[in-house]
Length: 412
Image 1 (cartoon, one colour):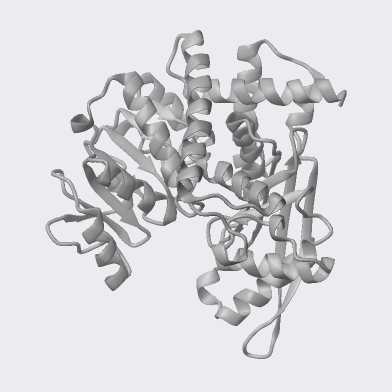
Image 2: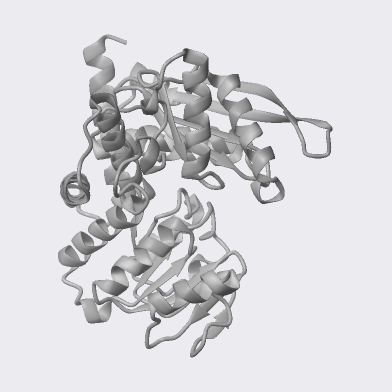
């Protein structure tokens, strides 16, 4: 068992001890149902054939079809994909939606591919996994390095293979081919709903909740914009090139315009350029990691000054860092709750595809708020019952209870 997945299973084991569980169903949850690896030959623009490796891990489908994104990133590997599939299993159970967990990926830097190469790679992935995915089997979605356009190509290729238009095979599609209104902002918006619920519980005034957001991609940018428009002070943001900081607050509209014109948030007027590492250590109340895994670790945990960490990225805090931060009474709002808005909206898109009946934006946002808020209340209630500030443990307890309950009722 490799490092990242081992740490994820350690969390499951920790929670099982807290719950006093040691049963056969837990053994089922410690291993994925299926690991699929395929070779993907792609004709490149230079006329040469290149073979990529595609992964799909289908972790558990006790509560419904496998669900999880497809990641195009140079560092994609089987350990990472397995871990992400496990987290999706937990996340869907926390959100109480009828899905299991899955994840896919290709080790590739999508930025180095032409549009044609990217399309051919996506269609090769669809062909390679056509017998393993489907609206009632496994429903992919966008993740790091993938886009609504990539989902449209995947859906189109799958539909050609199956001989019928099948929009429900993927979520996160463009509106024109069955995508849902509100899907692009759902992860950030869901995170904001959770954020406000936490502030309400902590009785923290809006004026006291200064925010730093690491990662100005779709999720981080939308969260920062929503928080800014709601009247919160966003003091720092960053992207892959670096970050900016102004303790008095930043204008998100102006930063977005600056990023569109320059390609980065760095060198924004009336702000100080900082590194991504330095952003994590700023004197702000709320830290929002929205990029990749393990950015908060044993090395920098002692220097973090935030009182709350809202995990919009998957797995941004290592096991060792969490122990240190807990001793400092830092409240960590775990990824399996904080960023669940994306998969909840994916569920809504899948429902609309299946019924061929589409909702207006306000209905999407209202249903998202209801679902996320309900998940938060269940987790917070579980945490309070235990008498500490370990939200991750509480979220896992909620998920494990639901997963084991389903396993027992099904007789697996």
